Length: 154
Image (tube, rainbow, N blue to C red; front, side, top):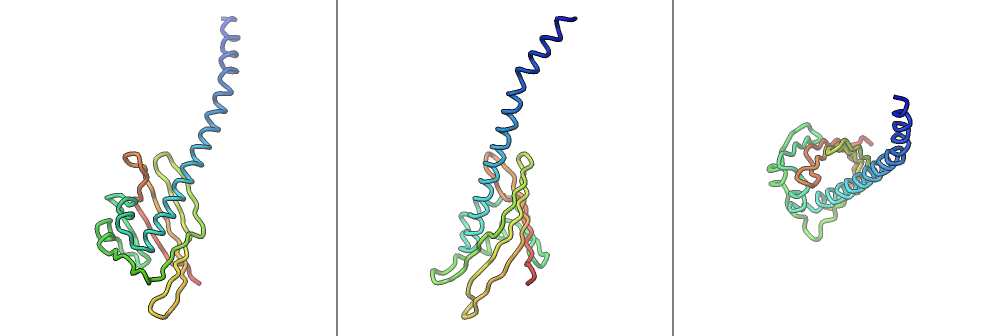
């Protein structure tokens, strides 16, 4: 029995660097996932501004649930049907001012503060929106499964 304690101590000490390495690698992996999701949010914002249905189709899960600022809920098929590519002369931009990512395994909650700028006829506008997006890694890729958007009061 007395011979077991030195062995247990040796195993414990030997695995300590491994445990620290796992924690360090876990943080690096989380940062990499966060960076990937920030990039996907950038792609999403650009595709929404351009009404690029092909990119949106790739980013949105087939079972997407979207809640608009007025509380109306739509799905992927309905949202894609409403996409009409912007005319080359259209001036519409969607800039992500702040993106916060929280990763929970193969699910992530992303909050995005964005500014939409453009021109409607001769009237210029600049409006801010706060969105909550839920992304899930499905079949090896991240896809948006739920979104809720609300305007930021000025």
